[in-house]
Image 1 (tube, rainbow, N blue to C red):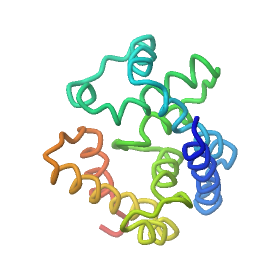
Image 2 (image 1 turned 90 degrees about the vertical axis):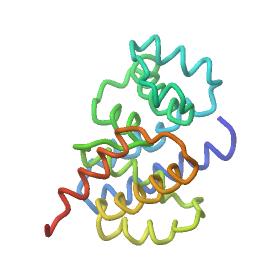
Image 3 (image 1 turned 30 degrees about the horizontal axis):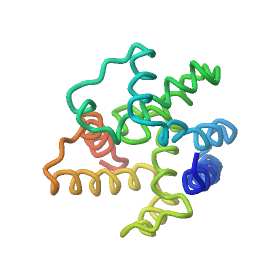
Length: 177
């Protein structure tokens, strides 16, 4: 793991603990999931694919054509098979930190959000995302989904159904509706 990825992983873990305290989630699980969320990101793509295959996962057509999604899938297999982690909430938090999904657990939402709001993030809208994350995980996630959906569609890139299902689930279950 390179210096940037190491720093990013530490920052995500720290941000995850902050969010866990704020929203009443297990802080230790948040730290573990945060520190490991990108565990396979810098592994060569062919090795990521082998980890995925060894885990018995068959990629759908969008995933096959989106190598940026592979690290979350391979990472979820890696932490189970190589690190012996059996906590399904940690595994799912790693697995869905890139696309989200409908019906996310609190820990999954925290890792998804912490990845967008970690200290070194400086993209256009990062400060807005951080501010939203302190008020409502769901509102922060809606903001990030909108950003991702707009970004991918502007490039005419495929959007994984999990991302769309995540967005729809958040909007349809928004508090106050």
